[in-house]
Amino acid sequence: MTRFSFPSLVRHAFGGDKGWDQQWAKPEPKASYDVIIIGAGGHGLAAAYYLAKEHNITNVAVLEKGWLGGGNTARNTTVIRSNYLYDESANLYNHALCLWEGLSQELNYNLMFSQRGVMMLAHSEHEVQLYKRHVHANRLNGVDNEWLNVEQAKDFCPPLNISPDVRYPVMGAALQRRGGTARHDGVAWGYARGASTRGVHIIENCEVLGINRHADGSVSGVETSRGTIGASKIAISAAAHSSQLMNMAGLDVPLECFTLQALVSEPVAPVFPCVIASNTVHAYISQSDKGELVIGAGTEQYVSYAQRGPLHTVEHTLAAICEMFPMFTRMKMLRNWGGCVDVTPDRSPILGKTPIQGLYLNAGWGTGGFKATPGAGHLLAHTIAKDAPHEINAPFSLSRFQTGRLIDEAAAAAVAH
Image (cartoon, rainbow, N blue to C red; front, top):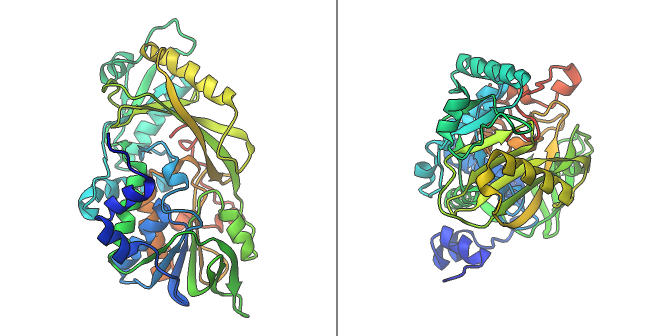
């Protein structure tokens, strides 16, 4: 069997060695750009792509301290959904889902986007009422969602254990059929190729060490491990480290970083048809195209930048998975990992301008970052190009923490992926 290194996979994604060397590989930073985007993950690369494609702004540099898509984009668990409760959240995530639905064709890159359905289990009368509320609210916002009784949930996902004798019996489920999964790092590669062919510079191994400002307070550029780079507009889109970067500009933001646990099993033949999430038992599960069971848990209960976590979280999650799906009790786990997520007090993102002229922030997505990728990039690009938010992301401004107009999203719990 042929084995590929990470660089060879990216070279293949960019059309072979010629595409790698000539279009994108290792451009030296110029002295200045119109726009600098800090973070070459899905969100930052999407923003660069839409700046070039829709706003004809191509003098853009995407700076990455590591390698393209090597942060949370490579560590998430691929789930996509838009069944959020409040109007603002539903509009934001449904905008992203609509972009997901045509993204493989637009980028001419197979993102393995699969609308296999996301089913969220209810284990108590309270959750039954809560999810029915979500269903009705989603329908009012034009977002598909439907309520299934226990038998219908079993029909949709045959491996599900609906015995009334388990610790947390299934009492029904909310199903979004348009939800599903996609290849996590594939979306970063697709956006990177699309941006680079339009003239965007993607500069790896370029850590931002400081943000420079003019005498009037506006941004003037960044100090990096590869020298000073000037820019009149800077967008921060670096998951988990946004607060540190904002501090470089002299601004404190209401963000905390937590470790989110996940793991995958050995690959098996296709046995699991959808995505299932359960808040009560802090677990969710799907099956990748390679056959691995992709399993996620909740966030750790302490603030940390560590991309790992204690085993007791994984043990609790696996016990819950085995109770819900007894057929998996003899499966072997291949690896587990932790991803760092930054979280706001109201569990909703910050996406918009900051009080510093020319500085924009895209952060605080918590567990919702991957599913929002195309929408977040599209809206961030609009905000940068127009120096004003789109009507969809206007409610997610940093100023809401001063006015008290929070978006305390009930469907954005740390395990409701």
